[in-house]
Length: 137
Image (cartoon, rainbow, N blue to C red):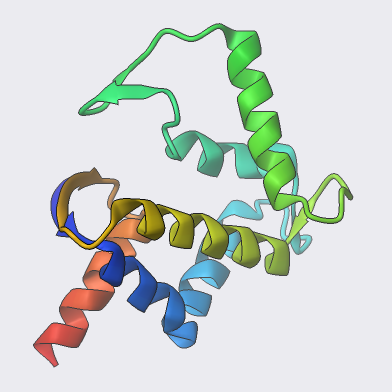
């Protein structure tokens, strides 16, 4: 984990750079697709959903949550990705929903920079690195 400063423009810039965004999406999808069938099952996507840390209070301290409630939340999140209700998520669904979530996050952040603790391989961390590389060039 690292502490990074980012704003909505950092996220939007990364998502709008189709080449960089698509490479990141394809790499993450391939990493999650453990059986290499080109589809993500609920089990394969669960680790990614858990990394969203939807039940967190302050600086990585998790909240005790009813396991049934937690399972329901993760199932609901999976359904957000499974646009065609096939029970699996293909690359296009994964890309589309990840893009939608990132743009929603950017929209909610506003224009002022915020300091966040980011997982090393998270899409937000990749967005920060993408912005830093652009500024260095």
